[in-house]
Length: 240
Ligand SMILES: [Fe+2]
Image 1 (cartoon, rainbow, N blue to C red):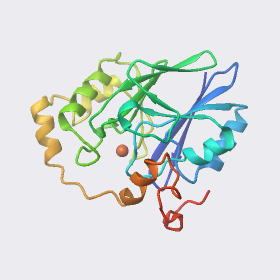
Image 2: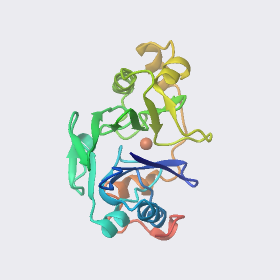
Image 3: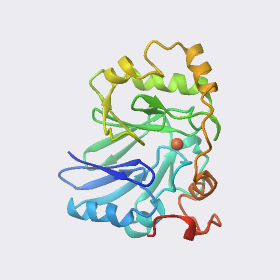
């Protein structure tokens, strides 16, 4: 197995490359706009061929790097069935899988942060996007957010064995991995929190609007094609 975790400083986004050690077929999860050079270099170093570009959800905080990666590799763009995206290649449903070499990536529907949020499992590693973060979870106050659904989705993730690893979509405190036992035990949104308490807590968060939401969501609704979405790319810090 080949695994590489990458971090985008500007948006605190974690991107993951998974590859089969024999065939070198690869998957990238949640690439970031402007980081295609970094990602392609990493794939080349690994001798890997990108087969799937996989999104956990329609992000509000960054534009996906899918467009540049797709142009360079012709990999298939995959997002959750309920993301509603019409620009991608595959809308993946609960229980469906992607094969890369002899490896398998499983899709798990985890709505709540957004309607189409999808978590992916590879071996004992779970890529949760923003459904479950380390010591936190995604917000539910826009993009069809739903507290009740997010609570149920988090419980679904936590039903995996304690030792399974959690790889989130973001971390703002330098952390890079957690596991089921740790999140069950000390995540303040989960540990000892009932569904009713969770809903109340989420309703009271009162968070500021994400800085890039007005460009990120429209561009991501075009699978990262900022031009097609009418976004002025001069305002985006990265350049491809
Ligand atoms: Fe998000």
